[in-house]
Image (cartoon, rainbow, N blue to C red; front, side, top):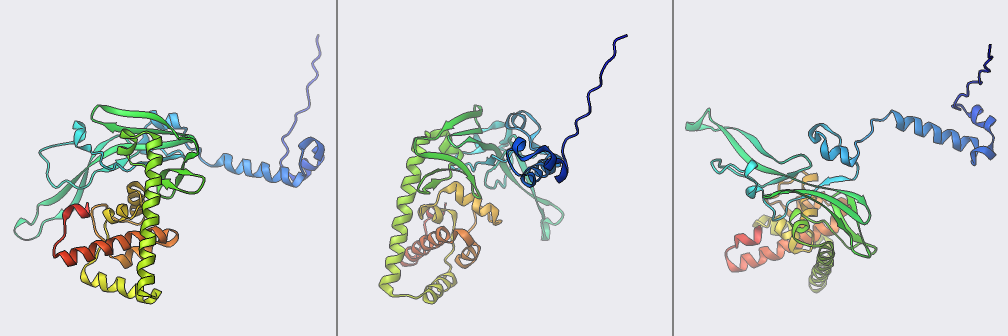
Length: 315
């Protein structure tokens, strides 16, 4: 008969005394630090794990949590009209196309019922919601998926030297060491190389600097105080001055960043808003909001002198 010697069961350390018995030399750190790291790992282990990027791509995205490095990409000039699956020529009341991290679909918006002689009939608006999203795989690589007329286009975009991809509150952006950044749209990624997108970031930065110099010069020339400047904004608002997305783009802000900023604050893409309302929302991004308001006021002055406005200046 062969006798077997049972090995003593080794328990994982969980208390401060357990870690103290192991000894500092084996752990490479103090018992208190090792216990804190263990507790943190145990706490994170109980939290639901986010799906990996590959599982998110092939899985049922409409019920899955998004990976931390994934964000939607605004469409820009890219349109869902070319995608037959979500475009119905018989439908009316189309609103602006949207973007999603899910597969493309036709969104039906219930706007309530008509009043008066049309009472009882429901009003519906329709929006083509296009799959358009990206994932920052590493600082130098961006993976994106955008549906086009010929199918879903997925690709890795490599950042040029001196630039990197990352995520901020306004979505995916390309940024350099000095903080010059640009949030690309779907149309940018489909038609431009990463180097050209970086060039667009530099161009926008020059426009912003020029707009700021112009605004500062106007204030110095008129010798206006902050209170007088606020009064001028209120009077322009009383005349009908409103701010739109086109004003933000003319001020040197990127279209995608402006759209995402507006969505975070509950603003619609095709609408106009009061300058004081937007300035109140500015918070940490008040400088860029102020540039958009200044651009809108310059456009408003030109329209008042001319006696009419041009629709293209508001789109």
